Image 1 (spheres, rainbow, N blue to C red):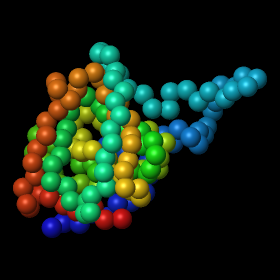
Image 2 (image 1 turned 90 degrees about the vertical axis):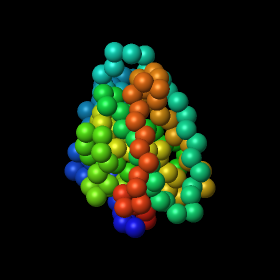
Image 3 (image 1 turned 90 degrees about the horizontal axis):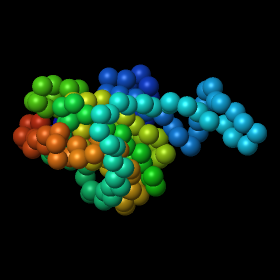
Length: 163
């Protein structure tokens, strides 16, 4: 079985899949008032539909063996890990056929908002350290019902993520 080493997320490594921003350590230009600093538009996305904010709770598996992946044909997805760092696996868009040979795994610090572009292969985030991860999934409403293709990976396509 192929093994993928989870690497700390960087702009350069994650650029083919989307963008991210560490929300609890904002940097760069801010609009400032007497009591506040506002860091506008650090991550953005278009939507013609209402946007849903949905919590997900994921248990840490004994081994991080990836047996399924999903993608959204026309929809981006954002994930914000709330109580632990998360491990997120991604692979490039590939017209409906998984390309796990190109998969990467990223260690994403908690409170870092990740936006994956449309058609990027992924699945639920995994806890990096704790026994359970709580994260916020942000998607246009009902994407999971209207624009979500889940694929069972063959034994040859499956991979294990290691830290």
